[in-house]
Length: 216
Image (cartoon, rainbow, N blue to C red; front, side):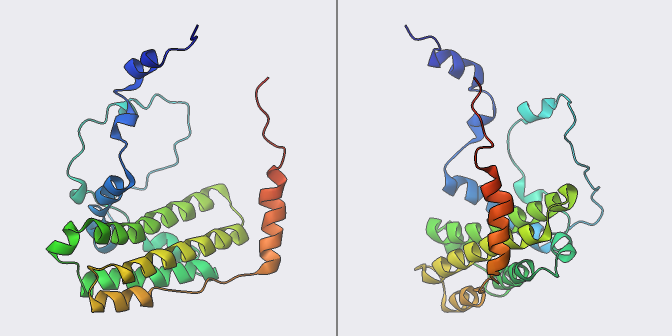
């Protein structure tokens, strides 16, 4: 006999956060609504939100209401987090890539037809997604005291990811010649330090071998 029934779980959880999940294309499309304010209209008057890891009842998490007005959401300046680690080579490279991306959006702005083109919009959205992702990594690294060598190694991966999406955008059929030139200008070769890579593998990856144990 089935001990745990599936429908009992569905009835309990269908109204929770999983209902907000969608396909990657839908989520990237929604993310794009934040892009103008995030990249070009930072708000310095916003309060600094402290770290929240206390044992508190966050009732809002499960009662967020309908989504809407994403284009009106304001943000701190994303550049501030990058500035704190500007001395790290791969962080600096990603910052250069993002600056070119912002220049593309400002100087070779996608037209209405391109914005409705799913493949093109998805390509632009994937490039943008790297920026807040990188910002969150830098903010958490500062709070957690993460080793700078590890930060720069992570950003080496992000630089390569950005390269991938830039080259893909270059090849999209809807991409104009001017936008294609911007896309190739985004490409950067990440800085690779073999000794650092080996040390990070030893200290942060191999050290986890055998650390996880199943509950008895």
